[in-house]
Length: 91
Image (cartoon, rainbow, N blue to C red; front, side):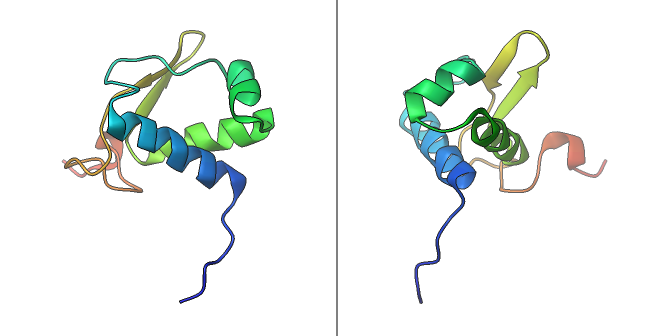
């Protein structure tokens, strides 16, 4: 199987997910602000925003408007599979 290139926002989302999995960013921790993340990771603000959307889709973070983005889950835990979240789960 060939290694296909990945989008920068997916690489960033994977890097942040790894920080969450390692405990560097524990549950309840706030992610740095978007502008701080551009400097921290050396990417554009658009890349940061897309990465955060990806992390929300994975069920790892939640964003509160005007408050920030917070860790709410761990990779690989039930209910945090890629592409699902509690809001999307059937009743």
